[in-house]
Length: 311
Image (tube, rainbow, N blue to C red):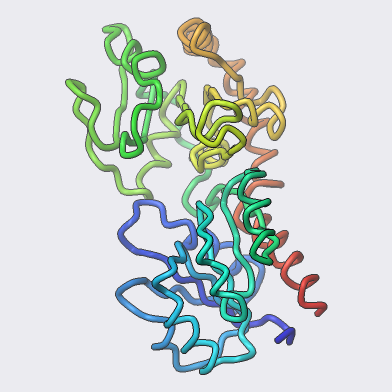
């Protein structure tokens, strides 16, 4: 182990609307690596006919241990990285078979400490934006919608009664809504690659988070993660209104932060003041394209991995 990394395999499901390791694949590709994408569970890493230098497997479970043992026997020099969103004490059995665990959270001290107890230093690789699918469209200067929200309710309530429904119920707003279901408002699944054209013709793209994504509001209360939409909307070159405090640290004032108390006022202000919204959107785009693409994330990730293996 520890040889130069040239050939990389990303393993992720093809059923999820926004499979994270597909974004990783784009990042490795942009960095010039020989990278391939293996859909799981349709295919197994044991089906690989050539030895990769690095393999990243999404959503590692204890039940995967026999597979990783067999893979280590087949390709002993490959660096194996598993992604996870939660700690499991049985991960201790994977020592020697899974070299590193990665979480996609911006921070989660409880997970850091838990992984240390079983001999792993958890690597944080936050989400990013896909500049292959999200970018400014030159002929999108005429806006079609006042508001756009593309999301889902699959993980419980995220404050729709404050952040979403009042905007949908206002007859003065022309709204675009896509996702799972929003009570009497309906909703439908929009293909990921179609979202950019909608973002580009919307005055105010709204983006709000589940409580468990924000510091002090979830269980555990120290978890922090910013969703992909923050970065993708910024890369589309369009304005967004957000509720997550982390945007102020990453994007300064280019993505206005609003709370439940001033959400409606902020929305109505930027709906009317489109010149100001466009100015902020351009600032957010420049920050995103320089700092928050998958290429940037994968460069940082590989720097950590190579340092750990002293390449």
